[in-house]
Structure formats: C-alpha cells, structure tokens
Length: 114
Ligand code: AMP
Ligand code: ZN
Image (tube, rainbow, N blue to C red; front, side, top):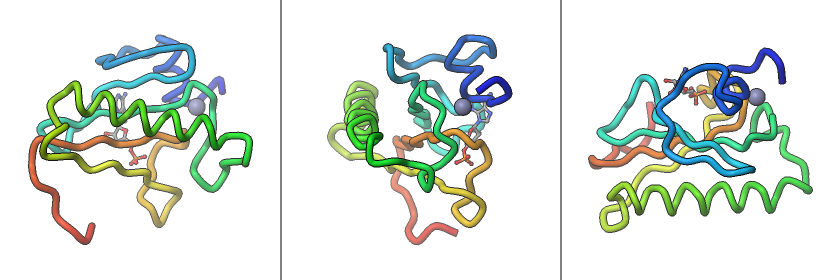
C-alpha cells in the first residue's frame, strides 16, 4: 500500500533498525521500545489488522509466528520466553494499520494489560 508506514519500512523507503528480512517478512526494532528487547515482525503483504485475515492467509500467519519464535530465540529469549502480541483495531490499541507481531523480552511482563 502506497501510504502505509510499515509497507514503506518493508520496502526500505523509511529507515528502520532491521532484525531480519526474507521474501515474505520484515522484522525491525520498535522505535519506542517497551522492554529491553522489542521488535516487530510484519508480513510484506499489506493486511490492515487481524480482523482482515482471510483463510488463505493462515499459512502466512503461521510462518510469521514461527519466524518471531526463531528471532526471539536468537536474541536471547529462548530460556525465559517473551510476550508475543497482536494489537487489533481501536480497542486492541493498534496504532499502525498493517498487521504486526510485537515481540517483547528481557524482563518479566505484567498481566492483565492496562
Ligand atoms: P501498535 O500500537 O500495536 O499498532 O504498534 C505500533 C508500534 O509501531 C508501536 O510500538 C510504535 O512504537 C512502533 N512504530 C511506529 N513507528 C515506527 C517506526 N518508524 N519504526 C519502528 N517502530 C515504529
Ligand atoms: Zn502496509
């Protein structure tokens, strides 16, 4: 999508601190980290939010989650774990309308969320 922030980041039109990239996914550090480790994993395909997922996206989302797991392991969260979060639309606290999986690690997280 032409005017989507995360599509622009995935295309390299807006700079980011890249964690990983392949033909399907782009992972980068969050610009305002909420934990010692905080990165986002996005599909290069523009999907606005989780409510827009279609049945044909299920394999893509499965690979996205597995990609996040592998990166979290590589970045030191294998033993203690991490928080994996999809915010969705206004009540979910989503501010960027391109599906992204937050990975937060390096400290113990609170529950429930505020
Ligand atoms: P959400 O609130 O779930 O939509 O998350 C959007 C996330 O994107 C927030 O944690 C922001 O800090 C992060 N963010 C916004 N702009 C950028 C950017 N240019 N580079 C990296 N992360 C960003
Ligand atoms: Zn997009």
